[in-house]
Image (cartoon, rainbow over all chains, first blue to last red; front, top):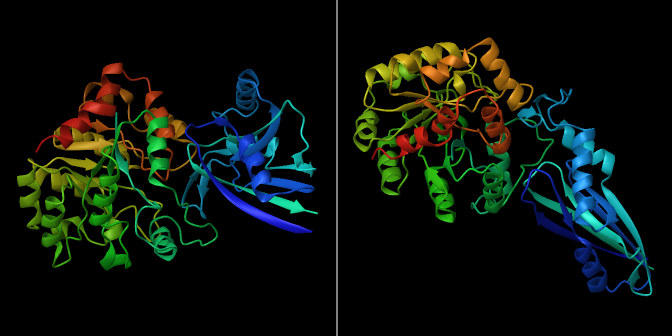
Amino acid sequence: MNTIIKHFNIETHKPIEIINITSLILGFQKEAGIQDGMIYIMTRHTTTALLVTEGLSCIEEDILGNLDRLFPKQLDYHHHRYLPDDGCVGYNAEAHLKSIFTGYFLYFPVENHLILKGTRQTIYLVELYGPASREIIIQGWIS
Amino acid sequence: MIDIHLHPLFINELDKTIDEWRRIKTVFLTESQILSPPMQPIRAVLSKLDAANIQKAVLLPIDCRRSRGVSILGNQDIQKICFLSNRFVGFASIDPLDSHGLDYLEDAHAIGLRGLKLDPGLQLFAVKDIIQHPMWKFIEKWRWPVMLHVGYSFVPHVSMYSCTVKDVEMLVDTYPKINFIAAHWGYPNSLELCLTAIKYPNLFIDTSAFYFDSPTKFHRDLFEKIIPLSVVEKSLRHQICFGSNAPKVYIQDMKLAIEELPLSDKTKLAIFQSNTEKLLNQR
């Protein structure tokens, strides 16, 4: 089995934001020429997330709104303290919790040159502590 | 709106190696090597300004080559970033104990920098030892504002007593024609700093203090426990400038902390805009 890995930088522009990256993933599969195999997608950050859902703006709003409702920024978190490895105060616990809750990787099988996903399934990167320059990694496994 | 306190660190466009950025991180942020320098393109800084609805930012370097062997950016670095966007205003930094300091100051003026940043703790000098320094004549002539680190610091090996309100008082009293900006509310001696500013109209204070909890909670505590907010509203509204201290804090979070204080709209406008405009446009 061969593998191919690519790093992609994505600039986000808002404190929290949901970005459709479906075409990026489809483009990777096409360019890599994966006929049969699988694709893994991973974010390298603890304050972003990856998810799959129906590609509707109302769902996007519901996701961001409900993540905020579950993990409000203004709560008092243990993480809000001086962090010696950063040299400054951490105060983004809510972003970490949203990221854990949502997940940091995705997987898709590939068969006959097609990523096997439902027609309604849209792939998103979720920025939870932006804006920032973010990196995702896509790995293709070719059987 | 203007942010008067931004350190443009870890910018891809600056011509520095990752080892140089690591050294800067060691001196300015933490000696821990666990995390890599958080590199970013300049457009990420601009996005952060946009997210906070801040139109301009003052960029601050610190020349600590003598004391720490590296600059937390040099004047040329600041000039280069200013070329990348007209939303930046560059301040200079010189080491007052460097025999070439005055030359560097004149160079900085010649390349269009518009103020001076001093950090006695990082630069290892005592304010009393530079009170008669010839640089003050130039600064007064050019009508440059002077940003001064005052009070507490997370920076390794920097004492919170390196630059105190007493030092600020000495400067503003000796040089009444120079506008000084005491950074970080002078925390924890914020009340003394505010009292000094009431007495000296050439003393400005920036809001870039944040040492525990969140920026919002920190400022709520500051104004519940140390400074009556009425002092800002009645006596100091023309002397407080919004500063974030990015990248140690996100600009939008510091802005929210100040926005949420129960101050009048007129005072907030002065803090976010007109006070800093006045300081920058006195040439």
